Length: 226
Image (cartoon, rainbow, N blue to C red; front, side, top):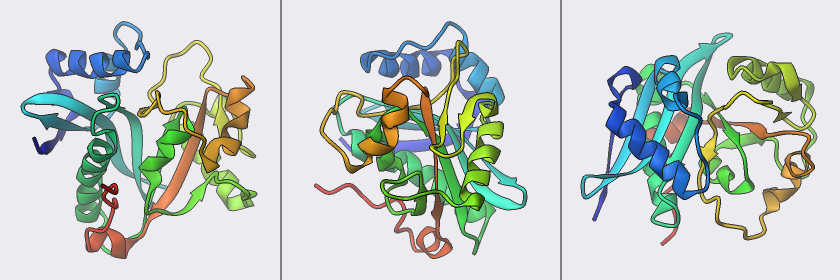
């Protein structure tokens, strides 16, 4: 069956849809605290939902906004069905966000940011430019400043290491990319997660740039290989 995607205001998300998203997360071994998704529904603007044969297989909460004048797609959380068309589902959800970014910010490069818990989440940044953090790259002063801006926007500025982009949520539940958590295959991005593996951070705040031409010609996000 083909994956169908829609985007609607978060306020239009039903309790049944929230339960479906919570169920997808639980299948990855992630249990959101009671009331967490309902609170995120109130805090964020847009939700993309992916369905296969009328069954929800993925969802993403996000917003389009300008940070200091810079057009941005900020992704609060993503959930996908474990091991079942995960890459295609993620690409379908991102396509929804990028279509809206093109409409909102025509002819502009757009910053895309999310919170990652594992290196598999870097699939979200496929096709983007100047992704930070990345292996072998020492962030510039401006990139570290972006990490701080994004941490503040995500409510994680109290415990950010801007040298690594690692952030500690503490006891407060946060949204992140719940995707391919069962995939333990080695990745080139594992090294940038060393701060998380050592317990010094809960998530990485990762960002990259969707170039205007890639948004305009529809080449973002790139489709996963067969």
